[in-house]
Length: 317
Image (tube, rainbow, N blue to C red; front, side, top):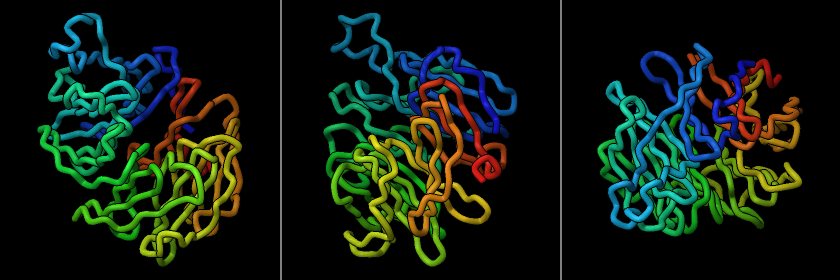
């Protein structure tokens, strides 16, 4: 395992995004205070990123000259040699900055449609905004298009499975689209509770849509099946709400990973049986991402202790 030092803000890490930029991997993080940091796994160095307030020129906030960004969610992208960051939060609409220069490139209106989640996807960004019920695709130049309206959305995800890239959203249910042609592939609904994190993985002859809920339950559906047809579950994966889920391949087998109070719990992605756990005592994991870091498939986690951890296959075996 590779571990960072504690984030210099001495704060929990609220969100993270892994990006490959200028030949190496960086992990972009949001701290508790709305600040943005990057950490380099190769050098071990943290760097604070000073970003101008997205709405500084808006007349509505003129009476608040000391207003600052309230960033909770981040998605990073490397485009034409520039490191770009799309971000916002529970009390801030999405905007885009150049992390290298610190320049604000564009922002969405100050209209109360705060960010619910944001992800990077093949040179673009995907956002879900609170109260709007809309999932949107954004180009780096600020042009956008509506992907779909699916009701209230709490989370977004992306995964490559079955030979295609998927866009995923979670709220009252789990929704999937083909990223190549933006067609809707299916919607799936838990027995009760809202979906708070969603991902997908390839199984032997099908693709599984995997979701966790505010009830602490794990669900998986076969893409292309009827909306109420489960692959398995629901599986009781936590005594409390689950807000993070990922898939890692370990010894050739895809495993679903969910956080627990002092461990990472592992589940067989094919049938939902528990496949083990690894110690994570004191980590307080609240965010995780399966990613490629410096050429290796890994799981990146963080949370309350303000430390980034990079787990490879051997750490989870």
